[in-house]
Length: 222
Image 1 (cartoon, helix red, strand yellow):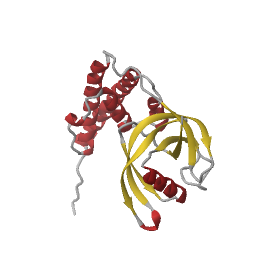
Image 2: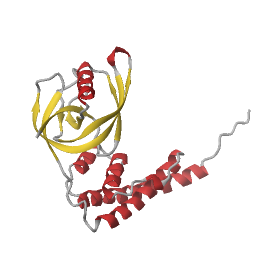
Image 3: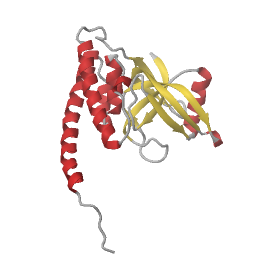
Image 4: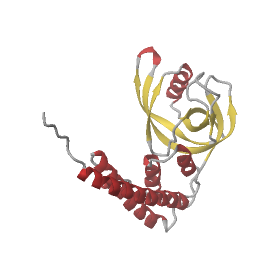
């Protein structure tokens, strides 16, 4: 068990995934500077209720399962503010919250992922890579951005976490994926999600294409 500084946010961080943060509250300036001095991570937990900003709403009530954030880059700004990039590390579960500092602390147990050497995992990862590639290719065409599916990780678990972070679903649904403790169940859950999302996306694209193709152009006789 370890004592970990916690940052409740309206987002879910997954292992291996980067996150950009702007640090402006005094309590989090203190927390981040302490983490930098100690070269130690902090934890990101999704808010169930309450506000990210102190005094802006009800007391924050976070979920108990989160992910450590390891600081990779820091840009120092005026008045002690910071922009930083952190990388998701280990999943953890909070057993008890601690309020002895200006920021939230948690007694945490780190969570392992079972089944990472499963013989089925490789085949499931291949299927997931195909679904994610098709989905992101379709999104890229709609938003006119470039995408190369060879950039997707080959490791099934890392691919699942990347796909979960990119999925356009409510944060509580992402939290459910973060909480899964078995590699096969994780990859299967994300695969099922992307199969559903791809069907929905294809329906939306098929409905919007004729309208855009038949939409009359703007014409003025003046």
